Image 1: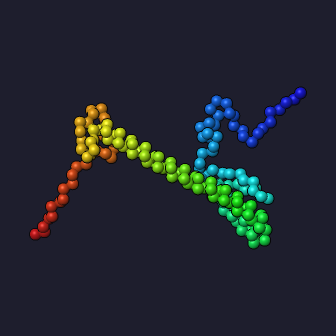
Image 2: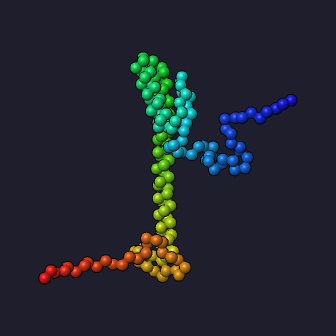
Image 3: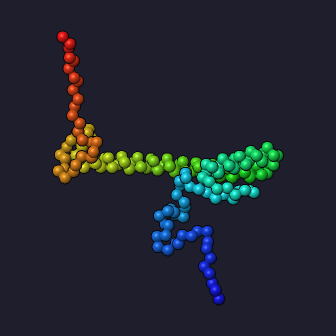
Length: 151
């Protein structure tokens, strides 16, 4: 008996670490450049969520102008689906930016504490092995230049 291994749509192995870093809890990471394969009513479309939204919207308009209300509604429902995906991606991106900003703020506070700054920004006893972070060095005070009189 000749048994061949059949190839499935997902060619990645699941053993070891095979792709687990790419997928988070079985979900594809939110990425606005992710390409979707969509099988809509009477049409197969491929593209990003934004592109699919626009394509299904256009198909819905075309079906409406042709007088096919049922097909138009199906296309508009597909467009709404990709619209929701775009909103979820935007929300995830905004949440990621907020989390990054909070982490950066926490790192700054830790560095300030390690260098010996107190709440007012005054230098305390700096630890000898800690170097100030570039851009956070104390800057010399700038004095106004005296005016030169021509004479």
